[in-house]
Length: 128
Image (cartoon, rainbow, N blue to C red; front, side, top):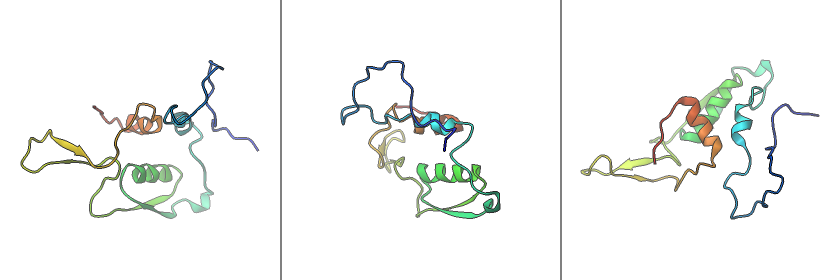
């Protein structure tokens, strides 16, 4: 069986150092995989419109719902009383509105190309 979806990154430099715990955060080119014209997968046409539960309305949940919709499914997103998981930013009552704290992830490195794929897809503006 063969796949039309890329599953490896081709590098011109064959002398790449081995991937170790000190290597890149994300050594796989997920953005190439996500942008492939064949999409992430297919389901039988008889299943189009089927509801699928997605737990969490943070970035991962919204991306999962988006990809499920592209395949013809009907995602139903279930969320707690607030939206935001690893991308949750909060302000401080009574303080300058530009003073915020990240309550989710510590960082989103440039090597996180899958995240950047979706940021670019919807035209989000980012800043340090």
